[in-house]
Image 1 (cartoon, rainbow, N blue to C red):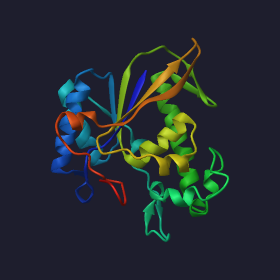
Image 2 (cartoon, rainbow, N blue to C red):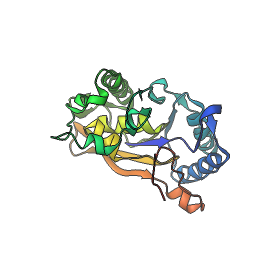
Image 3 (cartoon, helix red, strand yellow):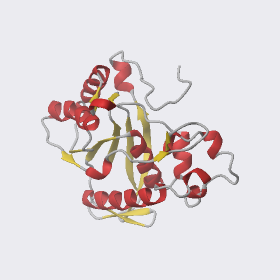
Image 4 (tube, rainbow, N blue to C red):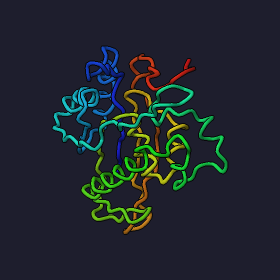
Length: 233
């Protein structure tokens, strides 16, 4: 199975949709995804994800299912020297100043995350993810996934940047704080997870493409730096 984690196109946050530039991005994305097809389409309930997704669904003549758990995470840091930030925007210089570096289990000990909803939110996402993937035919057992049914389906989930990074950390068993500070998903980008099967019993998620925006380059569209706080040229 291939799982495509797709961030919505350039957002118009006040109006819960995407910008005119975002519509062009979503059209380019639909053209790219239609070239190889999909088996199932899922989307966050938020307008910017739904409006991005509709171009692909219409192009393929498919319906979609809304997965409420894939909406953007409500995680804000109120008081930091860097202003009010989403948790995934805490500067890497802060996270990497803590030695030893945060692990898969110790990331929540970072002072800025203590007393926040990050740990609880992450645990809830993990439960929803495991239930979702079990529906796709993969049952999580600790860090591996038992194959309940062999499938080569291509599954697209239209979601959000912060959510996507958090989900990726769970799927790949990576320290969440390092994923938040070390990766960025551009608008309309596609991250591809292959469920790597080396035996008849087990599959392990493997990232074979991160933040792909080749569809933008193909249509002569720029990569818009939504979510990059400072220098992006």
